[in-house]
Image (cartoon, rainbow, N blue to C red):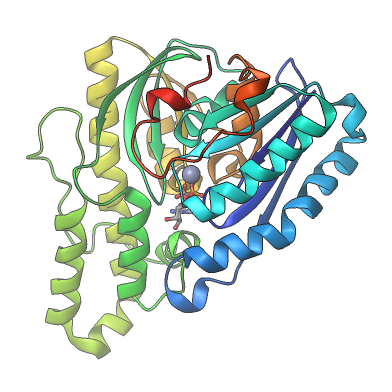
Length: 333
Ligand code: KG4
Ligand code: ZN
């Protein structure tokens, strides 16, 4: 039984996953304290993780109906993310592993989003193309095995979730804007306004900066009253452009790899319009539950199922990494 902990951003998460990939508990405690700031405040996130992490772990064990005696492996997000936030999860995981003599598996957060679909009941198996679209990252990968994840392309500027959150903010919606934008868009016409989809960006890279700027100019042109009156149409058209920007690259990736299997992950993959658009493609599409798309610890266990544990003497010195690729020294031996 794997106990996994994820604290890379503003959700304190713990999960219990059986060795066969069945999720026994997937506890997500959203901090909800950053909304007033329009974004995550790193110091506040780290403090909130410190207050909740033990409680969330206890909750996951209780929900799974097991005790620490039943845990055979501890998994934890090592990076990328906010270092102060990551350290809380790492310290908790290290303490449990050392005190109980359990193997510890450090996991890359993005690999977690890529492999969330491999958990039951989907149990989607490689090879497949993975789309990860979250608040911090947006990329496409070719997955030939749990430890064979090859990046095909990614955003050149903003992540999809960042573009959604910034657009939502321009429309006066609270942070994080994704779910609010989706609700508002439901009452609007996606064809009312034409926003750019970065069609000119060739290959499998994406770009959202032009889209965000285009909404800014459009709201300026319309003026306050007209923008307010047409908020739903603006939301629907903006969401449509985000979805198309992504879908164009996904179609290219499927064509170029010759694979007809697609898995989606990351917070933006919770979006109904994106899910529907991608499910309409000529491919076998794995669409995980929304709770497996946004940040969660079950996806961290999904990766740890297939990775070797750190040697016991390397556990105390294990450090977090903030961005990019994990440093070579951080890779489990
Ligand atoms: O993966 P995630 O939970 O955290 C990161 O690792 O970033 O993704 C969060 C992002 C936010 O930008 C949020 O607005 C977006 O996912 N999001 C959505 C929806 N739910 C969350 N975007 C569009 N539609 C949604 N329903
Ligand atoms: Zn994430």
